[in-house]
Amino acid sequence: MEHRLISAIEAALGWSGAEQLGKGFVRGSMDDPTLVSRIMTPNRLLDIAMRRSLNRPQFRCFQKGEEVHPAIYYTDSVSPRGQSISMVNMRSLGRLLGEGATVIMDQANVFDPTMEVACRALQWWSRERVQVNAYLTTNDASGFPLHWDDHDVVIVQLAGEKEWEVRATSRAVPMYRDADPNSTPSDEIIWSGLMRTGDVMHIPRGHWHQATRTGSGSGKSLHVTFGITKRTGASWLAWLADWCREHEIFRHDLDRRHGTGTDALTEAAAQLVSERPPTDFLDAYEQATALPRHVPFLDILGPLDAVVCTAHFPPQIEERGETVDIVASGKRLTLAAKVLPALRLLLSGRPVELERATAVVGAEVTEAAEILVKEELCAVLTPELFSGYTGLVTNADS
Image 1 (cartoon, one colour):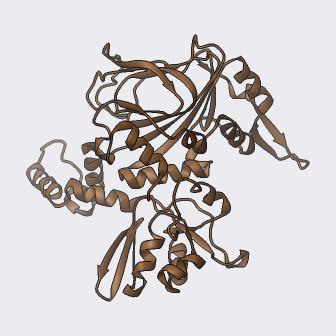
Image 2: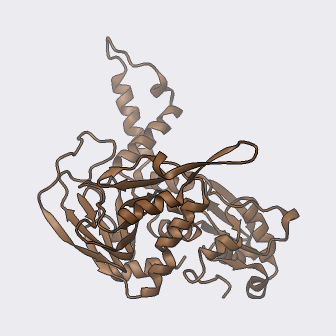
Image 3: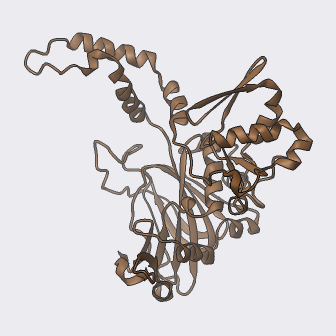
């Protein structure tokens, strides 16, 4: 899937793929000024908050360095039957933002189709899970104090300006669950300065950083942070621990008094390690991922006229002579080889309008699309979902 945001990030950071992810701090600027407003604007972020029932920690507000109590900017909307739904009180939120505040929307990709598609494109690019948080700061409000993240981040400044400070790590590749709390910041400042509209920054895991508008006066800042969580050796060992349950020797109680059987247990563990190397874990990780949320196809609501592949990672297409196998999201589908051109189109990650696709790859594309939608590897391309691709990802049948 070719996404304009990924191309712009690569150009800004001097990358030619995801290989440099997590390797070192780097920043740059995107050349296309229209791209940032296409990704997200402050008003669109507030519109999302207005139209959905969001709760902490999905949507939070901070002022003067402290979290504002939700009761101040949340209101229960009560129906005529007395049913209560918690909604953001936009007047109260507007007052806080007017005074100077920071609002945070965690996992904006769950609520906004443009963010959803951007995260899916980044997942296909990085082969890792991606989520995005959006941060809107007004006037001279402060941000989070100096902290580090347990994953790599790519930050895109979408509107306004914000002061940043990035420091070196004080513990190599720290983890959320770790042997050391890693609570002492490094004194080594790698970069400090202003992030302006269109700027991009990559902060690897464990680097201390903070951002603020304190002292900046009237104005705003909107940035999105794409969190990319890569697999580690500890992740592999945790995966092995699940596989060990297949073998009886690992299910037996440990002999606390005499320690008998430890040699056999050690040998079995070594055998398990050799049988299931890290490459197997990485392959299994992509396949074990749960299917994404999407609108189900119901023929009573209308014909299937457009689809898009929504698998978390690129499906594998394996040619086997007269048949072809599709491997994705823990499933393996076998279809006739004659539909291979249609499958390549449908599984490209780009929107496919079936009537136009028929002229490109043949009538088989409709039947193949129905199968892939039924198996939940593709989704109905609703107008809302299609809006997440418009102007950012070219249609597959163009």
